[in-house]
Length: 92
Image (tube, rainbow, N blue to C red):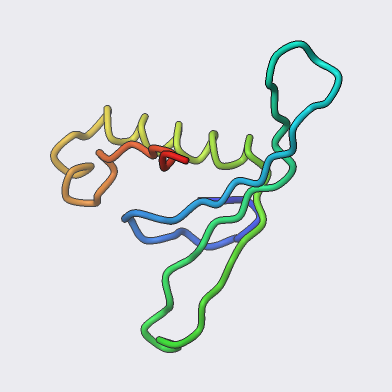
């Protein structure tokens, strides 16, 4: 569960959009994350409505850690709930 959302989100894959800016003045390329958005699945009550949450990256990391800990504690139920997948950033 994400603290900024308040409700538990159903298990599954979610699109996470990360915006970064390049740090200038360094001798190597470096970037700083400036925002993160989580695209939620439409609810059955409102199939055409798309909702986007702006997240703190630490909040998402903590939610993923909690889900992974729950999956490790109860592997059969974790697989059924979809908690066995790992978030992977898309190639750019």
